[in-house]
Amino acid sequence: MVKEQQVMVITGTSKGIGNGMAKYFLARGYGVAGCSRGDATIEHENYHHSLVDVGDEAQVRGWVRAVKNRFKRIDVLVCNAGHAPADLLMTMTPGTVLVDLLQVNIAGSYYVCREVSKVMILQRSGRIITTSSMALGLHEEGTSAYSASKAAIVEMTKIMAKELAPAGITCNVIAPSMLMTDAVNALGEEIMQRALSKLTIKRMVTIEEVCNVVSFFSEDESSCITGQVIHMGLVC
Amino acid sequence: MTSMSALKLMQDSFDSMQRSGMIQESITVAPDTIILGTGSSLDSLGFVTFISDLEERVSAETGNEHYLILTEIHEANADQAFLSAGVLALYIEKITG
Image (tube, rainbow over all chains, first blue to last red; front, side, top):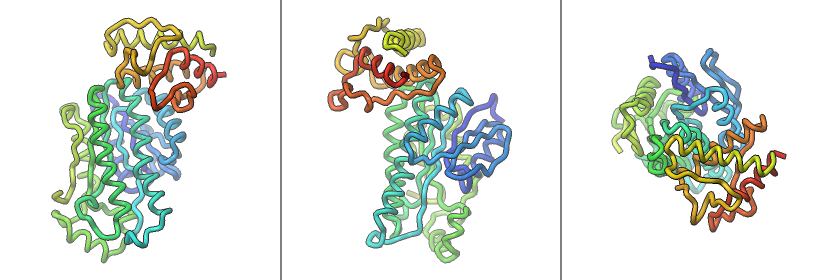
């Protein structure tokens, strides 16, 4: 359990990894502010949900202000919300798919990190954790748009790490391999097995393993670790 | 909020930053005080701290949520990165009504 209630902001908490992370850290005494484009799927006295499209700059600005007003501080941000569309060869990828990915995966993370970092700058402390993907290490056909968006997250985070270090804020990246989420399940058994066969550790990672990395980045003792990427299940 | 009240909030913000050690020197705010650009006492992180702190003060003072969006300030030329306290005060007066 944490010493006093720490406040964690997690985007994309209605399902998948974000949902699992929110439940994990609520169970460990955190106050959690989550958001998604859909209704809350978590009921907990220390959880507060907001309907937010992270790709909408004004919505993000208002949401982060509301979180600050409610919780008074933000200790940890986990930027998790993102799209992972079905694989499409570049020649088959419509511009609308590309633009949607860039808007949610890059602009969404950018807006949330920007607004939360302002809160953390005033505190002179904070932990920002963004989410990339195993796709960076696999270079799989059909993931050009998705992988490009996740590569951008890594570069954005490294630059944020340098800009925010003087304010006592660390910025790091988690790059999980596969978790059994609805989105992954929808890919089908054949695609899942093909992806697993390319991993170094040929199994799904668990939400507990992902949260363990988030915990590590969030520890007081991790204050000198910034601009790093932890790949899970894959040598990169 | 009047521009004079906004200047007072800026002074409060600078004083707070100095007390907390974020800036070393005492700054007396006047309309021609340079907030951003050549001659400013703030580095980039200091500028973000100042704007974020000022946003909170303006919101608390007015009882409404306000955001200081620099691209909305006509006189704040993004290419030349220049902003004075007077220009910022007029902008705050405008957005707070």
